[in-house]
Length: 537
Image 1: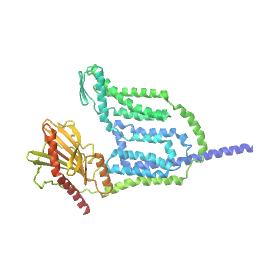
Image 2: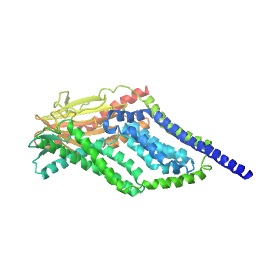
Image 3: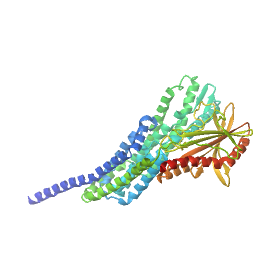
Image 4: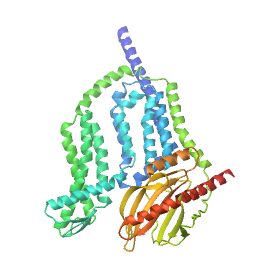
């Protein structure tokens, strides 16, 4: 009887101890979730920028599923996590600091995509700091999967459009259909077609990679098989989209343009894509390895019973790690707010550019009925300079207190703003020009309309630095703002007309730059200096 009582007491003590250990091990989990929620709240503007894109863009609507998918993959690893001790890795705080600094520089440079990636990168590092690197490594794949939440991919649209057009035209020619092509537009005997943004296949590609990565993780245990399947999930939708476009054109061609020429061709496209994905997953299932997880999970569950009694860490250590995370991630938004508070909103002063030698006469008449397009509300200056029978147009667009969608470096700042404009950009290149004893690499564009040809040179002015490299300009603007030196910057655009040979215009522009570059930069420095004078008042 005594033995029976001892056995019951031992069993009861084990169960009570196990329950206490389980509850104590859940404390770091709740703290991590609380800290992550706090991070998303502190960086609420970036968080909302991600969510708003999910809401308004069908291409990135999958973002709502990324966090639930990640949580599910972590839950699948629960038995393995039970075998690990939660030991904070405070030494990783410096990594979080670097990510925060990267976020700040991206914010100052108005590079939203980097801000979003930095925010997501804070989550796995936070898990590592509070729960330890062993835990973070055990769930590295689910944590890395969170990066799919960032709505990125628009830069792939042009090459995807080109590939789809190339594939479709080649397939039509191989099947004996005559094709006449101009860029992404092509004509066949039955009608005209074009490959536009909706036909690029970006939605199919993003959906395929997102689902394919999830499928690879849940289905395979070998990293080689996982990577091979992920690579297939990238290649297959690209080729399938080309095949989809070809089949749609052929359907319209064979039906005398009665089918697949309206909304129905989008429906056909999604049906075709769905069949391709089902086929891809079905083929991938022949090499599945997830059956082995069941036996492994049982073994890990048995092992976890032993570790649960000593797998906890003191609440003090966990709270210390969480506090360091909160302090580290809060520094950068606070400094960004400080920089915003000291920025000035002084209006940009007038800028008069006069050649003291009298060689170039200035007036305000338009050279041609063209002007570059810019986002936001910059200060715009225009001048026309004449020398004998030569004429130069100068556009200077000046930005101050830059922010998202009102900045010097932005994809919306373009030479030809409307695809229906009578102006066309028929050539782009980089070239070196002489600035006294220095050489500057600038962007050169050739614009054409039915009445005139223009040669355009353009580059950025950033105080003491001139460059045509947008990445360098972005970085320099961020550094200047980080150091409290403001973010004044301008784009200089000089242009002239030519008849047949742009070489004649190059000589005119080079002569003008040789004579007027110092005057242009001094005038810009005067505008910037006027800002500094007002700051000191």
